[in-house]
Amino acid sequence: MMEPLTRSAPPEPEATAEELLRWVVEQSRLSVDEGIGLGGLAALVTEQEPWFTELMRSLLMRHRQMLAEAIRRHCDDGTVCADLDVETFLDCVVGAYFAEQARRGEVDEDWPARITRTLLPTFAA
Image 1 (cartoon, one colour):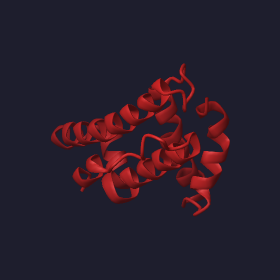
Image 2 (image 1 turned 30 degrees about the horizontal axis):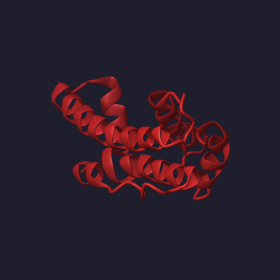
Image 3 (image 1 turned 180 degrees about the vertical axis):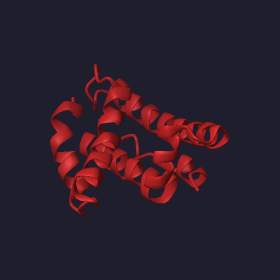
Image 4 (image 1 turned 135 degrees about the horizontal axis):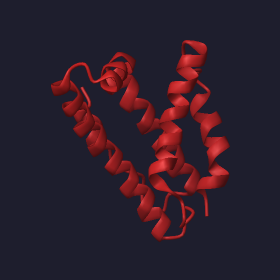
């Protein structure tokens, strides 16, 4: 399930903002497609199974922490905008994925490129 996703290696320290953002987008997509799934998300949101909700939240938070730490390292080195609200930014990426799925019934294969292009001006220093 989600456990392998929490171990993905972040990009190299010298990665550009665009490379880092592409990685964040891909990791966010994988956390849904190969992790919790859309049904899992629905179960998480409705909280019908407390044990499932607790387990999924803990796995998602570890995965999200890995993404946030990578972004913050790049904020510190000047690659990523220093005043970026990292948590809200990650919400935007994941939210855009779910919005596309809800709107179209699927996520186009060009979605990673579109979301990267859209968010890069806010992300890059």
